[in-house]
Image 1 (spheres, rainbow, N blue to C red):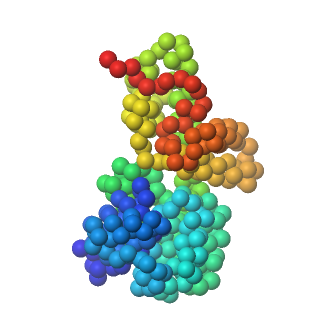
Image 2: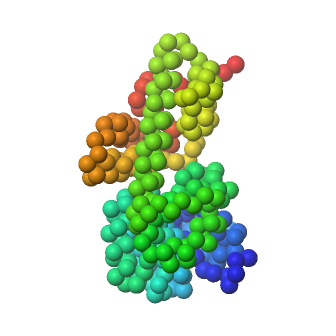
Image 3: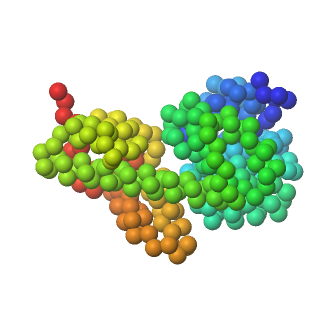
Length: 302
């Protein structure tokens, strides 16, 4: 058990949030949980023996509040909007830890608002997907301006991830997450494009992936996403296409705001926006190739 039986609030019980909150419960934290889906919230509370928040006041004794939501707009609504906002109910000096994939500019604005009412904000987005969320081995990128707040959040973060990276000031974690996902999205685009070209040339998808994964072209996408989800037709990474398109768009926006000429980022952002428009935000991100090329990228059976 965690010393002093500390309380943690957790908002967002989606594909990532559910296993993350489950790990906090198993680590000994007493949870109060909130999800926009009331039924899902009640199921989690019943399964883990924790409190379900019916109003912001439920978080009144919570020194650390974790948000795991689709984007910074949803985070802002939960923290400052829902029935007057959770922030107004938190005790003085509480720390809000946004583990969502948020826009870093929105994160900085929210941080200023929370500081004005005596609360601290830490951005701590994650990488690793549903599998690593479930086994508490996420990589976590930690940004913040208040070292004391980061220290108070640290036990919570270490119960969720195996590698913590201190990235810099508030917003830097979210910037790093967007840039990491841009690199991943670009790797997926390049590898899937190679498979599409190869199929037209008569190459087998399984053979191509075996060669790529034994050579310099290998990446997480070729080893995991394309091999386990695309080649099999499973399309079950658990990471939505809408979230990937959003993150790449954030990276492109950061490049533009910084004055860095990033044509590769602009191209990748445009291609993922095309996939989003054609397949919809709820599609698994591994399905994106289906919008780009009319080529079957499944491995041949037998």
